[in-house]
View 1 (cartoon, one colour):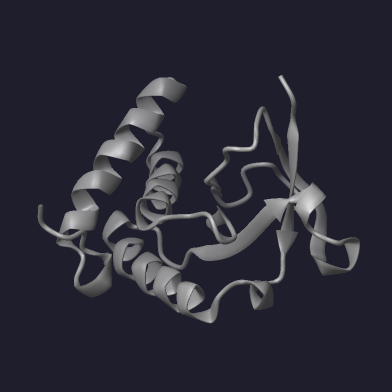
View 2: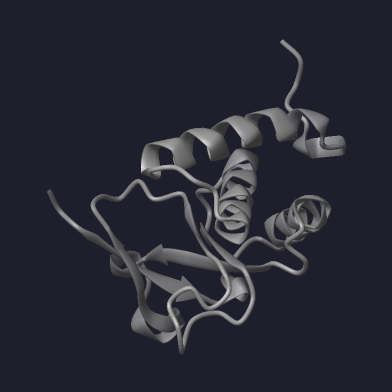
Length: 144
């Protein structure tokens, strides 16, 4: 299985409408989960980003190219890690559910959610699917 490397990119490389929409969504749901301020950062596959556009060296490696996002709770990795809860989204490839899914992972870390990786993913997926239905405006999916 091939591995993909992901690098952080400057938010100036992300559509400004997406930046505002993500910030709005995170600011709506983080307080209700007891998270306070959540930082949002953006990543792209390293092989797709010229060296001069990289904000950092490799941020993660994954087992494939299908990463949607990641969540890192405050100081989870010790020195050098984000000082506040942070979600990383793949620039240009995330959907509203991905934003909620990653915020839910922060909540899981914050509360000591008990479960293996499959349980954590199932919880984040289910919560995001339900929460998106209650968000106002453009975040709410159309009724079928």
